[in-house]
Amino acid sequence: MEKNELLLEKLSKDIEAQRSALSHVIGLIINLSNAVNDGFAEVNQRLAILEGKQGMQGVNTQLTDIKTELGKIQKAYPYEELFANMQSISKGDA
Image (cartoon, helix red, strand yellow):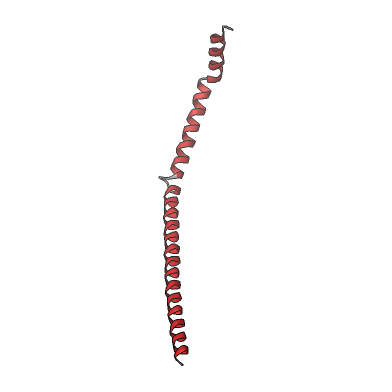
């Protein structure tokens, strides 16, 4: 009986050690999952800010305004023609 009792005690200790190790692993997985969720929440929050009027929408509006103004300038001042003339002058073709 002593051998059986010793074996049972050893098995109980082994099982308890494995339970403790698994508990730690599960705790780490839960912490990792929470950290990933928090990270995604922060990224989503930052993206939401960028999508707002002061974010990318505002930037896109400003870029559209700039493009419109550049179009007006290009119509008023034919830069391509001026550039071609300057190249001709610098090459001595004028």
